[in-house]
Image (cartoon, rainbow, N blue to C red; front, side, top):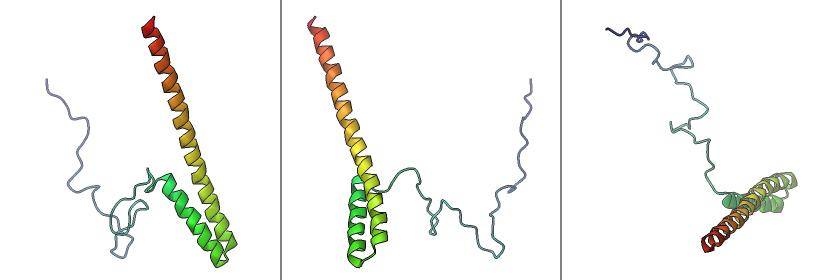
Length: 112
């Protein structure tokens, strides 16, 4: 017969008002830039190779200016991205080996 509505609808504009901090300005959300665009926290903006180059050059600059602590900090960042690159290369090699062995097994089975 007739279906009942399970959920009550909100009254007009209820729940859609803007939040403000009291002085008429809107609150800034932590995931929004000052120009209103959203930040993308899910993927890096640069590749690991580019970030390695960036932090290595920043470390050299900091060392040449005499800031050893900042240089060490940048070198630790560079080391992190070096490890990421090494892991990525290692997994590529392993995948190649696995793919080659499966292709060889298929070729052997076809010859039988």
